[in-house]
Amino acid sequence: MHARRRTWGTAIAGAAIVALGAFADRPLLVVAGVPLAAWLIGRQASAVRAFRAVDDRLTVSVSTARAAVAVDEPVRVTVSARFEGPDPAPAPVSVTVPLPVGATGASRAERTLEIPAGEREAASTFSCSFRTAGRFDFPSATVTVRSLDDLFDESLTRASKPTVRADPRTPSDLHVGAGGEALSYGDHPGGRSGGGITPEELREYQPGDAADRIDWKATARHGQIYVREFEPESDRRTVVILDHRARTDLGPAGATLFAYLREVALGFVDGAEALSDPVGCRTVGDDGITGRFDATSASAGYDRIRAHLRELTPTEGTRTVANDGESAASDGVGAAVPTTAHAETAGHAQVRPAAAAARADRLTDDTPFAERVRPFLEARDSYVRRLRGDALFGAVERARADVGSTALSVIVTDDADRDRLLEAVRLATRGGAHALVFVAPRVLFDADDPADPETAYERYLEFERFRRTLDGITRVTAFEVGPGDRLDRLLAAGRRQRR
Image (tube, rainbow, N blue to C red; front, top):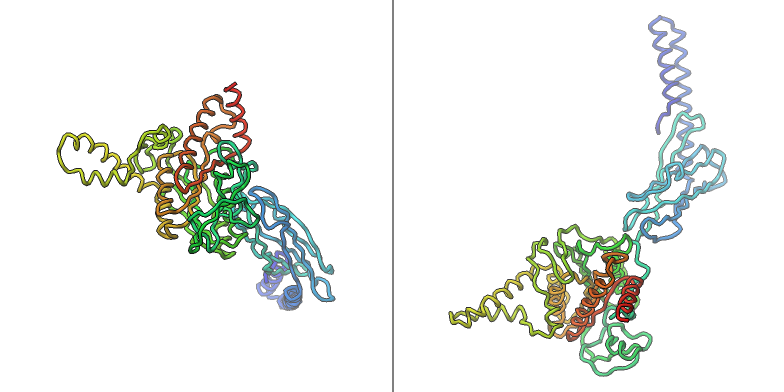
Protein backbone atom coordinates (compact mmCIF):
# COMPACT_ATOMS: atom_id res chain seq x y z
CA MET A 1 0.00 0.00 0.00
CA HIS A 2 1.20 3.48 -0.90
CA ALA A 3 0.11 6.83 0.49
CA ARG A 4 -0.92 9.31 -2.20
CA ARG A 5 -0.21 13.04 -2.28
CA ARG A 6 -3.48 13.93 -0.54
CA THR A 7 -2.60 11.58 2.34
CA TRP A 8 0.81 13.15 2.81
CA GLY A 9 -0.75 16.63 2.73
CA THR A 10 -3.27 15.72 5.41
CA ALA A 11 -0.62 14.04 7.59
CA ILE A 12 1.74 17.02 7.30
CA ALA A 13 -1.08 19.44 8.17
CA GLY A 14 -2.01 17.37 11.25
CA ALA A 15 1.61 17.17 12.38
CA ALA A 16 1.97 20.93 11.96
CA ILE A 17 -1.11 21.56 14.16
CA VAL A 18 0.23 19.28 16.90
CA ALA A 19 3.68 20.88 16.73
CA LEU A 20 2.18 24.36 16.87
CA GLY A 21 0.09 23.43 19.95
CA ALA A 22 3.10 22.02 21.73
CA PHE A 23 5.26 25.04 20.86
CA ALA A 24 2.56 27.56 21.88
CA ASP A 25 1.54 25.54 24.92
CA ARG A 26 -2.01 25.17 23.59
CA PRO A 27 -3.28 21.70 24.63
CA LEU A 28 -6.41 22.13 22.54
CA LEU A 29 -4.41 22.14 19.33
CA VAL A 30 -2.49 19.05 20.45
CA VAL A 31 -5.75 17.23 21.19
CA ALA A 32 -7.15 18.29 17.77
CA GLY A 33 -4.51 16.18 16.03
CA VAL A 34 -5.74 12.95 17.64
CA PRO A 35 -9.06 12.63 15.73
CA LEU A 36 -7.24 13.50 12.50
CA ALA A 37 -4.82 10.63 13.06
CA ALA A 38 -7.69 8.30 13.92
CA TRP A 39 -9.50 9.32 10.74
CA LEU A 40 -6.42 8.51 8.61
CA ILE A 41 -6.07 5.10 10.27
CA GLY A 42 -9.74 4.37 9.61
CA ARG A 43 -9.36 5.39 5.95
CA GLN A 44 -6.33 3.12 5.66
CA ALA A 45 -8.25 0.15 7.08
CA SER A 46 -11.10 0.76 4.64
CA ALA A 47 -8.64 0.94 1.73
CA VAL A 48 -7.04 -2.36 2.78
CA ARG A 49 -10.44 -4.09 2.68
CA ALA A 50 -11.11 -2.70 -0.79
CA PHE A 51 -7.67 -3.73 -2.07
CA ARG A 52 -8.13 -7.27 -0.78
CA ALA A 53 -11.51 -7.52 -2.46
CA VAL A 54 -9.97 -6.44 -5.77
CA ASP A 55 -7.12 -8.92 -5.38
CA ASP A 56 -9.54 -11.78 -4.66
CA ARG A 57 -12.14 -11.10 -7.34
CA LEU A 58 -10.43 -9.39 -10.29
CA THR A 59 -9.50 -11.50 -13.34
CA VAL A 60 -7.50 -10.10 -16.25
CA SER A 61 -7.16 -11.62 -19.70
CA VAL A 62 -4.64 -10.49 -22.33
CA SER A 63 -4.74 -12.09 -25.79
CA THR A 64 -3.32 -11.39 -29.23
CA ALA A 65 -5.17 -11.65 -32.52
CA ARG A 66 -2.34 -13.71 -34.04
CA ALA A 67 0.31 -15.94 -32.54
CA ALA A 68 2.82 -15.16 -35.32
CA VAL A 69 3.46 -11.98 -37.28
CA ALA A 70 6.17 -10.62 -39.52
CA VAL A 71 8.76 -8.17 -38.27
CA ASP A 72 7.27 -4.63 -38.09
CA GLU A 73 3.78 -5.99 -38.79
CA PRO A 74 1.24 -4.71 -36.23
CA VAL A 75 -0.60 -7.20 -34.06
CA ARG A 76 -3.80 -6.38 -32.19
CA VAL A 77 -3.78 -7.06 -28.44
CA THR A 78 -7.03 -7.32 -26.48
CA VAL A 79 -7.13 -6.78 -22.72
CA SER A 80 -10.24 -7.43 -20.64
CA ALA A 81 -10.89 -7.32 -16.89
CA ARG A 82 -13.90 -8.30 -14.81
CA PHE A 83 -14.93 -8.80 -11.21
CA GLU A 84 -16.20 -12.24 -10.31
CA GLY A 85 -19.26 -12.51 -8.07
CA PRO A 86 -22.29 -10.31 -7.64
CA ASP A 87 -20.54 -7.18 -6.38
CA PRO A 88 -18.97 -4.52 -8.66
CA ALA A 89 -15.57 -2.91 -8.27
CA PRO A 90 -15.17 -1.53 -4.70
CA ALA A 91 -12.63 1.06 -5.90
CA PRO A 92 -11.30 2.54 -9.16
CA VAL A 93 -8.99 0.08 -10.96
CA SER A 94 -6.44 0.62 -13.76
CA VAL A 95 -4.99 -2.33 -15.72
CA THR A 96 -1.82 -1.65 -17.74
CA VAL A 97 -0.26 -4.18 -20.13
CA PRO A 98 3.54 -3.70 -20.47
CA LEU A 99 5.15 -4.27 -23.85
CA PRO A 100 7.89 -6.89 -24.26
CA VAL A 101 11.44 -5.68 -24.77
CA GLY A 102 11.86 -4.99 -28.48
CA ALA A 103 8.20 -4.09 -29.08
CA THR A 104 6.97 -0.66 -30.15
CA GLY A 105 3.63 0.94 -30.84
CA ALA A 106 0.90 1.84 -28.36
CA SER A 107 1.55 4.43 -25.66
CA ARG A 108 1.02 3.64 -21.99
CA ALA A 109 -2.35 5.42 -22.03
CA GLU A 110 -3.49 3.24 -24.95
CA ARG A 111 -2.41 0.12 -23.05
CA THR A 112 -4.28 1.08 -19.86
CA LEU A 113 -7.80 -0.12 -19.09
CA GLU A 114 -9.95 1.75 -16.54
CA ILE A 115 -12.73 0.23 -14.39
CA PRO A 116 -14.53 2.89 -12.32
CA ALA A 117 -15.88 2.02 -8.88
CA GLY A 118 -19.31 0.45 -9.18
CA GLU A 119 -18.58 -1.11 -12.62
CA ARG A 120 -18.05 -4.83 -13.16
CA GLU A 121 -15.93 -5.16 -16.32
CA ALA A 122 -14.20 -3.37 -19.17
CA ALA A 123 -12.20 -4.23 -22.30
CA SER A 124 -9.92 -2.44 -24.73
CA THR A 125 -7.55 -3.12 -27.64
CA PHE A 126 -4.26 -1.68 -28.82
CA SER A 127 -1.64 -2.52 -31.44
CA CYS A 128 2.10 -3.07 -31.29
CA SER A 129 4.84 -4.41 -33.52
CA PHE A 130 8.26 -6.01 -33.13
CA ARG A 131 11.45 -4.63 -34.61
CA THR A 132 13.39 -7.89 -34.63
CA ALA A 133 12.58 -11.53 -35.19
CA GLY A 134 12.12 -13.82 -32.23
CA ARG A 135 9.70 -14.99 -29.58
CA PHE A 136 8.21 -12.30 -27.34
CA ASP A 137 6.45 -12.96 -24.03
CA PHE A 138 4.26 -10.15 -22.71
CA PRO A 139 5.04 -9.34 -19.05
CA SER A 140 2.34 -9.68 -16.39
CA ALA A 141 -0.30 -6.98 -16.42
CA THR A 142 0.00 -4.32 -13.70
CA VAL A 143 -3.17 -3.54 -11.72
CA THR A 144 -3.35 -0.23 -9.83
CA VAL A 145 -6.15 0.20 -7.25
CA ARG A 146 -7.00 3.60 -5.73
CA SER A 147 -9.11 4.12 -2.63
CA LEU A 148 -12.39 5.98 -3.08
CA ASP A 149 -11.08 8.95 -1.11
CA ASP A 150 -7.88 9.02 -3.20
CA LEU A 151 -5.70 8.67 -0.09
CA PHE A 152 -4.07 5.31 -0.81
CA ASP A 153 -3.26 3.04 -3.75
CA GLU A 154 -1.91 -0.46 -4.28
CA SER A 155 -0.18 -2.24 -7.17
CA LEU A 156 -0.98 -5.85 -8.06
CA THR A 157 0.01 -8.15 -10.93
CA ARG A 158 -2.00 -10.55 -13.06
CA ALA A 159 -0.06 -13.23 -14.93
CA SER A 160 -1.94 -13.38 -18.23
CA LYS A 161 1.08 -13.43 -20.55
CA PRO A 162 0.50 -14.18 -24.24
CA THR A 163 3.38 -15.03 -26.56
CA VAL A 164 3.90 -13.69 -30.07
CA ARG A 165 6.43 -14.99 -32.56
CA ALA A 166 7.86 -12.37 -34.89
CA ASP A 167 9.15 -13.94 -38.09
CA PRO A 168 11.58 -12.26 -40.47
CA ARG A 169 9.95 -10.80 -43.54
CA THR A 170 10.12 -13.48 -46.18
CA PRO A 171 10.51 -13.08 -49.92
CA SER A 172 7.27 -13.58 -51.82
CA ASP A 173 8.84 -14.75 -55.09
CA LEU A 174 11.08 -17.63 -54.02
CA HIS A 175 12.40 -19.50 -57.05
CA VAL A 176 14.00 -22.92 -56.74
CA GLY A 177 15.01 -24.62 -59.93
CA ALA A 178 17.67 -25.22 -62.51
CA GLY A 179 18.68 -23.21 -65.55
CA GLY A 180 15.89 -20.71 -64.98
CA GLU A 181 13.21 -23.42 -64.90
CA ALA A 182 11.32 -23.63 -61.63
CA LEU A 183 11.05 -27.02 -59.97
CA SER A 184 9.31 -27.96 -56.77
CA TYR A 185 12.00 -29.27 -54.46
CA GLY A 186 9.39 -31.16 -52.45
CA ASP A 187 8.17 -30.84 -48.92
CA HIS A 188 10.26 -33.55 -47.41
CA PRO A 189 13.96 -33.28 -46.59
CA GLY A 190 14.73 -36.53 -44.87
CA GLY A 191 14.67 -40.20 -45.77
CA ARG A 192 12.09 -42.45 -44.21
CA SER A 193 13.08 -45.20 -41.90
CA GLY A 194 13.97 -48.25 -43.91
CA GLY A 195 15.06 -46.27 -46.97
CA GLY A 196 18.29 -46.96 -48.78
CA ILE A 197 20.82 -45.49 -51.17
CA THR A 198 21.18 -48.30 -53.73
CA PRO A 199 18.79 -47.53 -56.65
CA GLU A 200 16.47 -50.23 -57.91
CA GLU A 201 13.95 -48.68 -60.33
CA LEU A 202 12.44 -45.43 -61.59
CA ARG A 203 8.70 -44.79 -61.33
CA GLU A 204 6.25 -41.87 -61.33
CA TYR A 205 5.76 -39.95 -58.10
CA GLN A 206 2.83 -40.99 -55.91
CA PRO A 207 1.32 -38.90 -53.08
CA GLY A 208 3.10 -39.68 -49.85
CA ASP A 209 6.46 -40.53 -51.45
CA ALA A 210 9.48 -39.06 -49.68
CA ALA A 211 10.83 -35.98 -51.46
CA ASP A 212 14.45 -37.14 -51.21
CA ARG A 213 13.45 -40.14 -53.38
CA ILE A 214 12.61 -37.79 -56.27
CA ASP A 215 15.01 -38.14 -59.17
CA TRP A 216 15.31 -34.51 -60.17
CA LYS A 217 17.28 -35.17 -63.33
CA ALA A 218 14.66 -37.59 -64.63
CA THR A 219 11.97 -35.11 -63.56
CA ALA A 220 13.65 -32.35 -65.56
CA ARG A 221 13.90 -34.61 -68.63
CA HIS A 222 10.32 -35.90 -68.63
CA GLY A 223 8.45 -32.88 -67.24
CA GLN A 224 6.79 -35.07 -64.60
CA ILE A 225 7.96 -36.02 -61.14
CA TYR A 226 9.76 -39.36 -61.00
CA VAL A 227 10.82 -41.29 -57.92
CA ARG A 228 13.72 -43.72 -57.70
CA GLU A 229 13.25 -46.73 -55.47
CA PHE A 230 16.11 -47.79 -53.21
CA GLU A 231 17.09 -51.03 -51.57
CA PRO A 232 16.25 -51.16 -47.86
CA GLU A 233 18.92 -50.23 -45.35
CA SER A 234 19.15 -48.70 -41.90
CA ASP A 235 17.55 -45.36 -41.06
CA ARG A 236 19.21 -42.45 -42.85
CA ARG A 237 19.14 -38.97 -41.40
CA THR A 238 19.21 -35.52 -42.94
CA VAL A 239 21.28 -32.55 -41.84
CA VAL A 240 20.58 -29.04 -43.16
CA ILE A 241 23.67 -26.82 -43.32
CA LEU A 242 22.72 -23.14 -43.70
CA ASP A 243 25.30 -20.47 -44.53
CA HIS A 244 24.70 -17.09 -42.88
CA ARG A 245 28.13 -15.52 -43.19
CA ALA A 246 28.36 -11.76 -43.59
CA ARG A 247 28.51 -12.03 -47.35
CA THR A 248 24.90 -13.34 -47.45
CA ASP A 249 23.65 -9.92 -46.30
CA LEU A 250 23.17 -8.80 -49.88
CA GLY A 251 20.06 -7.29 -51.41
CA PRO A 252 17.11 -5.17 -50.24
CA ALA A 253 15.67 -5.47 -46.72
CA GLY A 254 13.28 -8.38 -46.41
CA ALA A 255 14.54 -9.93 -49.65
CA THR A 256 18.25 -10.41 -49.00
CA LEU A 257 20.20 -13.35 -50.28
CA PHE A 258 20.14 -14.78 -46.77
CA ALA A 259 16.33 -14.44 -46.58
CA TYR A 260 15.98 -16.72 -49.61
CA LEU A 261 18.46 -19.24 -48.21
CA ARG A 262 16.61 -19.32 -44.89
CA GLU A 263 13.28 -19.99 -46.65
CA VAL A 264 14.74 -23.12 -48.21
CA ALA A 265 16.07 -24.34 -44.86
CA LEU A 266 12.74 -23.67 -43.13
CA GLY A 267 10.95 -25.54 -45.91
CA PHE A 268 12.98 -28.65 -45.20
CA VAL A 269 12.24 -28.49 -41.48
CA ASP A 270 8.51 -28.03 -42.13
CA GLY A 271 8.49 -30.93 -44.55
CA ALA A 272 10.33 -33.16 -42.12
CA GLU A 273 7.84 -32.40 -39.37
CA ALA A 274 4.89 -33.12 -41.67
CA LEU A 275 6.19 -36.67 -42.13
CA SER A 276 7.82 -37.07 -38.69
CA ASP A 277 11.24 -37.61 -40.23
CA PRO A 278 14.49 -36.94 -38.35
CA VAL A 279 16.32 -33.80 -39.39
CA GLY A 280 19.30 -32.00 -37.88
CA CYS A 281 20.71 -28.57 -38.56
CA ARG A 282 24.01 -26.71 -38.60
CA THR A 283 24.27 -22.95 -39.17
CA VAL A 284 27.56 -21.49 -40.32
CA GLY A 285 28.90 -17.99 -39.65
CA ASP A 286 32.22 -16.36 -40.50
CA ASP A 287 33.92 -17.87 -37.46
CA GLY A 288 32.46 -21.36 -37.80
CA ILE A 289 29.38 -23.20 -36.59
CA THR A 290 26.87 -20.92 -34.83
CA GLY A 291 24.08 -23.44 -34.24
CA ARG A 292 24.13 -27.20 -33.79
CA PHE A 293 20.96 -29.27 -33.57
CA ASP A 294 21.08 -33.05 -33.59
CA ALA A 295 18.63 -34.98 -35.75
CA THR A 296 15.19 -34.95 -34.17
CA SER A 297 11.69 -36.14 -34.97
CA ALA A 298 10.05 -34.54 -31.91
CA SER A 299 7.80 -31.48 -32.20
CA ALA A 300 9.89 -29.57 -29.66
CA GLY A 301 13.02 -30.35 -31.68
CA TYR A 302 11.52 -29.03 -34.92
CA ASP A 303 10.38 -25.90 -33.06
CA ARG A 304 13.88 -25.29 -31.67
CA ILE A 305 15.41 -25.52 -35.13
CA ARG A 306 12.80 -23.22 -36.65
CA ALA A 307 13.14 -20.68 -33.84
CA HIS A 308 16.91 -20.60 -34.33
CA LEU A 309 16.59 -20.14 -38.10
CA ARG A 310 14.02 -17.36 -37.76
CA GLU A 311 16.15 -15.42 -35.29
CA LEU A 312 19.29 -15.86 -37.38
CA THR A 313 20.95 -12.90 -39.11
CA PRO A 314 24.13 -12.68 -41.17
CA THR A 315 27.18 -12.61 -38.95
CA GLU A 316 29.46 -9.62 -38.57
CA GLY A 317 32.38 -10.64 -40.74
CA THR A 318 35.07 -8.83 -42.68
CA ARG A 319 35.01 -10.97 -45.80
CA THR A 320 34.85 -9.06 -49.06
CA VAL A 321 34.01 -10.72 -52.34
CA ALA A 322 35.81 -9.56 -55.42
CA ASN A 323 34.01 -11.47 -58.17
CA ASP A 324 31.80 -14.50 -58.56
CA GLY A 325 33.82 -17.54 -57.59
CA GLU A 326 36.66 -15.61 -55.93
CA SER A 327 36.97 -14.52 -52.32
CA ALA A 328 39.27 -11.92 -50.83
CA ALA A 329 41.63 -12.91 -48.05
CA SER A 330 40.19 -10.69 -45.35
CA ASP A 331 38.50 -13.64 -43.65
CA GLY A 332 41.76 -14.97 -42.33
CA VAL A 333 41.50 -18.20 -44.30
CA GLY A 334 43.90 -17.32 -47.05
CA ALA A 335 44.05 -15.66 -50.41
CA ALA A 336 41.67 -16.58 -53.15
CA VAL A 337 42.62 -19.56 -55.27
CA PRO A 338 41.78 -20.28 -58.88
CA THR A 339 38.22 -21.52 -59.21
CA THR A 340 38.17 -25.25 -59.77
CA ALA A 341 34.71 -25.04 -61.29
CA HIS A 342 35.93 -22.97 -64.24
CA ALA A 343 38.74 -25.39 -65.00
CA GLU A 344 36.51 -28.43 -64.78
CA THR A 345 33.85 -26.96 -67.03
CA ALA A 346 36.56 -26.21 -69.54
CA GLY A 347 37.49 -29.88 -69.52
CA HIS A 348 40.87 -29.61 -67.77
CA ALA A 349 41.89 -32.42 -65.43
CA GLN A 350 42.20 -31.53 -61.78
CA VAL A 351 44.38 -32.94 -59.02
CA ARG A 352 42.37 -33.59 -55.86
CA PRO A 353 43.82 -31.69 -52.88
CA ALA A 354 44.17 -34.75 -50.64
CA ALA A 355 45.90 -36.72 -53.39
CA ALA A 356 48.23 -33.80 -54.09
CA ALA A 357 49.23 -33.63 -50.42
CA ALA A 358 49.97 -37.36 -50.34
CA ARG A 359 52.07 -37.19 -53.52
CA ALA A 360 54.02 -34.22 -52.19
CA ASP A 361 54.94 -36.28 -49.11
CA ARG A 362 56.27 -39.09 -51.32
CA LEU A 363 58.21 -36.78 -53.62
CA THR A 364 61.57 -36.69 -51.78
CA ASP A 365 64.20 -36.95 -54.52
CA ASP A 366 65.98 -34.03 -56.17
CA THR A 367 65.49 -35.01 -59.81
CA PRO A 368 64.59 -32.32 -62.35
CA PHE A 369 61.10 -33.83 -62.56
CA ALA A 370 60.62 -33.57 -58.78
CA GLU A 371 61.87 -29.97 -58.74
CA ARG A 372 59.45 -29.14 -61.53
CA VAL A 373 56.40 -30.79 -59.97
CA ARG A 374 56.98 -30.10 -56.26
CA PRO A 375 55.83 -26.39 -56.31
CA PHE A 376 52.52 -27.40 -57.84
CA LEU A 377 51.90 -30.12 -55.26
CA GLU A 378 52.95 -27.85 -52.39
CA ALA A 379 50.51 -25.23 -53.63
CA ARG A 380 47.74 -27.83 -53.54
CA ASP A 381 48.80 -28.80 -50.01
CA SER A 382 48.53 -25.14 -48.99
CA TYR A 383 45.06 -25.17 -50.52
CA VAL A 384 44.13 -28.15 -48.32
CA ARG A 385 45.09 -26.13 -45.27
CA ARG A 386 42.94 -23.24 -46.49
CA LEU A 387 40.01 -25.61 -46.95
CA ARG A 388 40.42 -26.76 -43.37
CA GLY A 389 39.95 -23.15 -42.29
CA ASP A 390 36.86 -22.57 -44.43
CA ALA A 391 33.73 -22.30 -42.27
CA LEU A 392 31.39 -24.18 -44.63
CA PHE A 393 33.89 -26.97 -45.34
CA GLY A 394 34.49 -27.34 -41.59
CA ALA A 395 30.74 -27.49 -40.90
CA VAL A 396 30.26 -30.28 -43.44
CA GLU A 397 33.20 -32.17 -41.97
CA ARG A 398 31.84 -31.75 -38.41
CA ALA A 399 28.32 -32.76 -39.46
CA ARG A 400 29.58 -35.98 -41.04
CA ALA A 401 31.43 -36.79 -37.84
CA ASP A 402 28.37 -36.06 -35.68
CA VAL A 403 25.53 -37.46 -37.77
CA GLY A 404 27.32 -40.14 -39.77
CA SER A 405 28.96 -40.45 -43.16
CA THR A 406 25.76 -41.76 -44.82
CA ALA A 407 23.56 -38.80 -43.83
CA LEU A 408 21.85 -36.79 -46.54
CA SER A 409 23.48 -33.34 -46.54
CA VAL A 410 21.39 -30.33 -47.57
CA ILE A 411 23.82 -27.47 -48.19
CA VAL A 412 22.26 -24.01 -48.54
CA THR A 413 24.69 -21.25 -49.51
CA ASP A 414 25.71 -18.76 -52.20
CA ASP A 415 28.23 -18.92 -55.03
CA ALA A 416 30.74 -16.37 -53.72
CA ASP A 417 33.47 -18.99 -53.27
CA ARG A 418 32.79 -21.68 -55.82
CA ASP A 419 36.05 -23.51 -55.42
CA ARG A 420 35.59 -24.16 -51.70
CA LEU A 421 31.91 -24.96 -52.15
CA LEU A 422 32.83 -27.58 -54.74
CA GLU A 423 35.20 -29.25 -52.30
CA ALA A 424 32.64 -29.07 -49.47
CA VAL A 425 30.08 -30.84 -51.67
CA ARG A 426 32.60 -33.51 -52.61
CA LEU A 427 33.32 -34.04 -48.94
CA ALA A 428 29.59 -34.37 -48.21
CA THR A 429 29.28 -37.25 -50.72
CA ARG A 430 32.22 -39.32 -49.59
CA GLY A 431 31.43 -42.86 -48.54
CA GLY A 432 28.40 -43.11 -50.82
CA ALA A 433 26.40 -40.29 -49.19
CA HIS A 434 23.97 -38.06 -51.09
CA ALA A 435 23.78 -34.27 -51.09
CA LEU A 436 21.27 -31.64 -52.13
CA VAL A 437 22.86 -28.26 -52.83
CA PHE A 438 20.88 -25.02 -53.01
CA VAL A 439 22.98 -22.14 -54.31
CA ALA A 440 21.91 -18.49 -54.59
CA PRO A 441 23.69 -16.73 -57.50
CA ARG A 442 24.92 -13.36 -56.29
CA VAL A 443 24.19 -11.79 -59.66
CA LEU A 444 20.49 -11.92 -58.77
CA PHE A 445 21.04 -9.75 -55.69
CA ASP A 446 23.71 -7.23 -56.70
CA ALA A 447 21.21 -4.64 -58.01
CA ASP A 448 17.52 -4.38 -58.76
CA ASP A 449 18.11 -3.15 -62.30
CA PRO A 450 21.67 -3.80 -63.51
CA ALA A 451 23.17 -1.02 -65.59
CA ASP A 452 24.67 -3.62 -67.93
CA PRO A 453 22.13 -6.44 -68.54
CA GLU A 454 24.54 -8.18 -70.91
CA THR A 455 27.20 -8.48 -68.22
CA ALA A 456 24.63 -9.68 -65.70
CA TYR A 457 23.39 -12.31 -68.11
CA GLU A 458 26.93 -13.55 -68.75
CA ARG A 459 27.47 -13.80 -65.00
CA TYR A 460 24.33 -15.87 -64.71
CA LEU A 461 25.52 -18.19 -67.50
CA GLU A 462 28.78 -18.65 -65.59
CA PHE A 463 26.81 -19.53 -62.49
CA GLU A 464 24.68 -22.00 -64.45
CA ARG A 465 27.82 -23.75 -65.70
CA PHE A 466 29.01 -23.99 -62.12
CA ARG A 467 25.64 -25.36 -60.96
CA ARG A 468 25.84 -28.03 -63.66
CA THR A 469 29.31 -28.90 -62.43
CA LEU A 470 27.89 -29.47 -58.97
CA ASP A 471 24.94 -31.37 -60.39
CA GLY A 472 27.31 -33.58 -62.35
CA ILE A 473 28.98 -34.89 -59.20
CA THR A 474 27.81 -38.40 -58.40
CA ARG A 475 24.95 -38.47 -55.87
CA VAL A 476 24.55 -34.66 -55.96
CA THR A 477 21.56 -32.64 -57.10
CA ALA A 478 22.09 -28.88 -57.31
CA PHE A 479 19.49 -26.11 -57.55
CA GLU A 480 19.51 -22.36 -57.93
CA VAL A 481 17.71 -20.20 -55.35
CA GLY A 482 16.69 -16.59 -55.76
CA PRO A 483 14.01 -14.03 -56.64
CA GLY A 484 11.89 -15.36 -59.48
CA ASP A 485 10.94 -11.94 -60.88
CA ARG A 486 14.56 -10.78 -61.08
CA LEU A 487 15.58 -14.03 -62.77
CA ASP A 488 12.76 -13.68 -65.30
CA ARG A 489 13.91 -10.16 -66.20
CA LEU A 490 17.51 -11.30 -66.54
CA LEU A 491 16.59 -14.25 -68.79
CA ALA A 492 14.30 -12.04 -70.90
CA ALA A 493 17.19 -9.61 -71.41
CA GLY A 494 19.40 -12.54 -72.43
CA ARG A 495 16.88 -13.74 -75.00
CA ARG A 496 16.69 -10.28 -76.52
CA GLN A 497 20.46 -10.21 -76.85
CA ARG A 498 20.50 -13.50 -78.77
CA ARG A 499 17.99 -12.27 -81.38
